Structures are given as C-alpha cells and as structure tokens.
Image 1 (cartoon, rainbow, N blue to C red):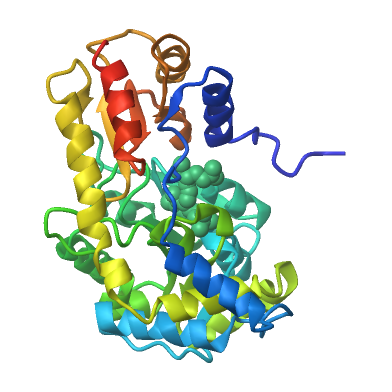
Image 2 (cartoon, rainbow, N blue to C red):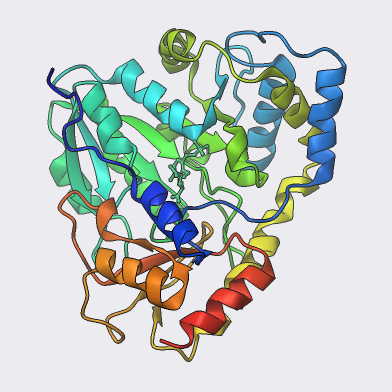
Length: 378
Ligand code: PMP
Ligand code: GLN
C-alpha cells in the first residue's frame, strides 16, 4: 500500500507539546490559551443543550450563527454576505481550509503558498492531487513579495493561500499590500484562500485587513475564521467560511460529505454570545497586554525579538545563545531551561533554519512570568 502522504509525520505542535509534558516545561509551543473562556459562553452552550438543540443542525450551519457571522463581517469590513448562500460553519478553520482546497483544486493544478506557512496547507493540496508552489515571504521581514507571487503564477495556477495575521511570523498585511494583491490577481482567474484565524489579534492600533474589504479579492476568496482562536476555546473546533455564492455552492458539496454538519449546541451558544460585539472588540487590547508583558521580559535578554504586529505568537532569534539548529535548540530548551517553543524550520518546504523559535503568549500572566524567569537565564 502506497502512502498518499509519504512525507507526513506527527506535527511539530504535537511533538513539542508531548516533550513539554514529559519534562514538565512551561508550554509556549502549540498555540492554545491556558486560561478559561468567558463563563457566559459556556452558559450559552449549556442553555442551548437544555433547550434541546442536540440533533443535527442544517448542513451549512445553524441559521442564527450564520446570520451573526454575516452581521459581524458587515460591521467590521463593510461587505454583505448572504447567510443562506455565502456563509458555512465548519469544524474549525482546519476543516474549512481542507474543504475549500478539495472543492476547487483538480489533479495537476498549481497552488501557491507563501513560505513559511501553516503545516496543514501542503498535505491538503497533495490530498487534492494539486501541486504546491512555495513562494518565500521576504526573508528577514516576512512581508509578502508581490513580484515573487506574480512570477509564480502560470496558466495552471488555481489557487493562492494567504494568512494574515501570520502564523508563525506575526506579520500583518497592510491595506496597501492587500490592494497590490488585488491588482495583481485582477487579470487572472486565480482563487484565494484567506486564512484569517488571528483576525482579532492585531496590535498598536492597526486594523485587520480582511480580504472581505477588497472587492476584487472577496469575489474570488474563501475567508476562513476560527471561533476556537477568537474565544479561547481551541478544543471546540468551530469556525466559519465566507465566500461568494458560486464558490460556496462548490464548497458545500464537499462539506456535505466530509463532516455534513458541526456541533449543534456550540453553534447556538456562539450565536447568542456574538450578539455583544464587545466580546471580540476587546481582544486586541487583551492580547496586546500579553504581547507587551512577554516582550518587556525579554528586552534585555540574549534572545532577539522579532516584530510582532498580530497573532498570539512572538518569534525570537536565538543565534546569540546557541549554534544548534532550531529543532535541536527547541528540544534543548525544553530539557535544560524548561520552556517549550516551536522551531520555525518545519514551516518551510526546505526546512530553512534561521535559528528562530516561536513562543505563544496566549497564556496566564503567571505562566508568562515563569517562562520569562527561565528564558532570562539564557
Ligand atoms: N490556520 C492557522 C494559521 C492556524 O494557526 C490554525 C490554528 N492552529 C488554523 C488555521 C486552524 O484553526 P482551527 O483550530 O480553528 O482548526
Ligand atoms: N495552530 C496551532 C499552532 O500553530 C496548532 C494547532 C495544531 O496543533 N494543529 O500552534
């Protein structure tokens, strides 16, 4: 039997979480909060269960949640999506991205991804029979290189995947960069997946530039969001996808036969929770506080801080501390210092090693303080 994904092993996130647990290290590796979500959200789900919302919902999702998602996109980005035909609730962004890829990539189609990228994209493309084309983000700054993207487009290019705010580099696309992409794609039929799972973690007064804001991008885009990331419940695995009706019709054909539907009471709970926009509008300030605490703690250390404009990740350059490769250094850091991070090289197709590690600061302040105490020993 020939493996369909011969290059795939266990993800670096699971590997580092297991290592952290084994050594009782502070786990700033895998991206998940160690604090509780708002009790009001749990109460909303509880009430939905008590009210009897425990059977299959409609295939594309509970109507009230699709309406709430459409209202939120209109309020934040000024674009109207029809809850009936243009919004679908998914089992996390992971399923939304896979489903979008399966819906539009034919065997042999080229799909452009920007390196470094989230680890599910490439295996997803390969499962669809597509050919991944890796275009580097600008080395050093991790900003999109529009000329390189343009040069990678061929008549076989079906799809481009972008991610802002970006995992792992924490860069956030500017409106100018999104507009430049819109111009670049205008003469093409290339489709777009815009992975926006960190949309509510953008700092220093900057705004998240959703593809929904740019008509030429929105017309060709599947926009992916994650309630798990937004409301500190990564284990719930619920997200949403917005796309124009024609694209969404194809998306739903695949969705119908890979999950069919997503957890009913959680959808009802999220729908009522979303009625208060303060619940997501307060998130940038909340996460900026954590970012600032973590950065201040490393300011005078030998770890060099990279810019962090969004997401809940802080990358550091450890080359002043060690000559080890980034995977070996991350393992050493767990064993000897008691802090887990994620090396950046697994996010690259060729394992490019810049001696950088990513730390997740979606943690209790006390967790961050403990990690900082240890990291300052370096
Ligand atoms: N895209 C990116 C860039 C991510 O970091 C993650 C979460 N690790 C996902 C997608 C998947 O999100 P979810 O947990 O909602 O499936
Ligand atoms: N998105 C999370 C991260 O980047 C991990 C999710 C996972 O473990 N697949 O850390």
